[in-house]
Amino acid sequence: MIYLELLWSFFQIGLFSIGGGYAAMPLIQNQVVDLHPWLTMTQFADIMTIAEMTPGPIAINSATFVGIQVAGIPGAVVATVGCVTPSCIIVMTLAYIYYRFRGLTMVQGILAGLRPAVVAMIASAGISLIILSFYGQRTLPEDLSSINYVSAVLFGVGLAVLRRWKFNPVYVMLGAGGANVLLQLGILLTAKLF
Image 1 (cartoon, rainbow, N blue to C red):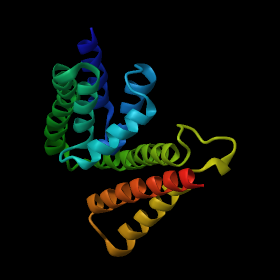
Image 2: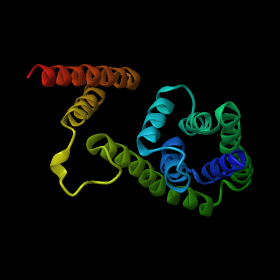
Image 3: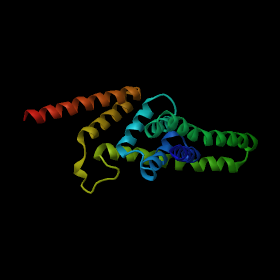
Image 4: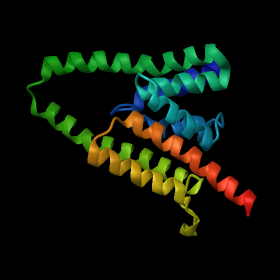
């Protein structure tokens, strides 16, 4: 039964994730955290981080990692197949339609209309992950002073490094992770000494 649930969940994700892997993140979160409590929000954030850092599309990597977490290697295969199948069918159908009717203004209008929705889905996923990192929960707390200042500073420094010096994002993520470990160890040692 779990294999059918994984297949159906990731089939839906593959079917409705227009705009790439980042646009699929809210859909994946809804399926694996909200509808089926297979993962906690913290586990989901960890899987998204790993899926981002590993080579390949983030949605497929996420499907594979969630499948392994839920049902082992067979679950990974089922989730990955479920995620890829609708995308392949849709892309082949759209390629045929586009090449056949690409000169029509209606086709150009449809493509232009999809762009804002994709931007909104990516922004939604990014904001959810930032709130989780800064506050340790999925929604903004009533008391905004409970922010994790280490995460906020690392985010700001990482963003500045990416924007100013155009470093490779993988190196920035590794640096931020290493800096976080060192800072947390320093905080623990300081708390034990005093």
